[in-house]
Length: 466
Image (tube, rainbow, N blue to C red; front, side):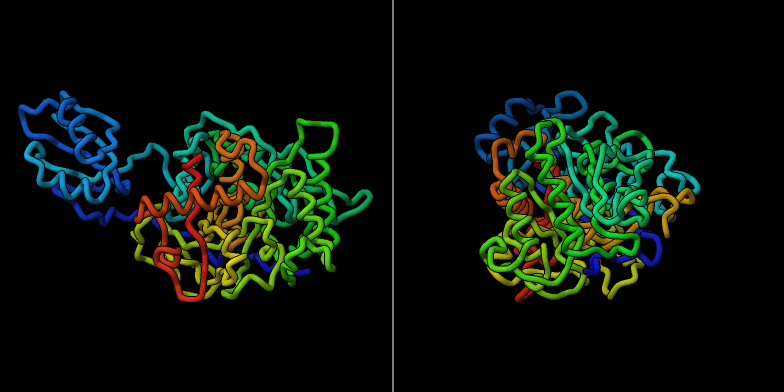
């Protein structure tokens, strides 16, 4: 079964951070990236900041985060659209300015894709995909160098580079080789790239993942060409499931990423008709493993591909994001990939598969999948790092690990505590829907608020919720 999700970048991602195109209420963000729905309210001289802020909480529903008394009179708050409109006419208010984000950490958006001279990644950078889903605002605070996520995540793929300095690989299984040739080290790069997006270490070098430092299990189900079979994939699922059923509670895999695809469909009965792969997935889910999988890299309905079509998995479609920020702020289409145009910031990736059936829409979520910087097996076949340890790739293969990392955060943070995998899938989707609804600027062209007729891509996931 050919792995259809290897969608190789033909060059480096050259996207930079564009200046915010925010519409000021009175003042704009002065070059800082706007934070949707958050504002700084400057009061007129003689006002008492605490008193007015408290009044505005009651009167306008302002969600006040800071009160300023000395630099100026005022406060910072999250405001609804109606509150914003009312505040501009309030007698105590001098001005209302959009809040904006500042960061000490560079994003992986330099001309060579790196955060340091020569592309050596001697200093850690924040990949645009990690930034776009707000993983730096999660409980793990990706990029602050302080935390590791206490969870086990399996990557069913080409393996993982066991010696990569930016990955915490704790074990694995080789379902492809045999005898002396058996190894779950990555002879390609694909599995290593996926692994970095999930859990690259927050260690001051290279990149950082959605769930930094997660314990990674390298489950090699594809060979060096990115090709496997139903039997090798079931072998991998069998191994992952075994960690939940053996006598060792310390190795329980909670999340499994499958950036792989083959022909097939969901029979509505967990494979009991004639689908051994579906039976394996269902039994693994019943044992407590949540699966995040890729939708596929052809712009067609994914109901004809598995595991994407299985109702028991969380299926990731791909979004184009070039700068790590919402709002389509990078107009340069500056990330060349070997795929069909157009490449437009904050839109559906032109190659992404989609759902049409209501049953498939119920397990679909969107995540960044274009110009994704992550770890590579050294020496990598391409990349912007001379040492071959880091580089860019694109595809729903790259979207799925953003989802796996977010699920890992939800479980490790306690937000998904006590939930079954199917309940976790629905929570991830409902939380994303609620956040997108409350924060209209967060999503993308093609999401359910700005739909493309006949094609469902789901809501953009947000790691920052967990």
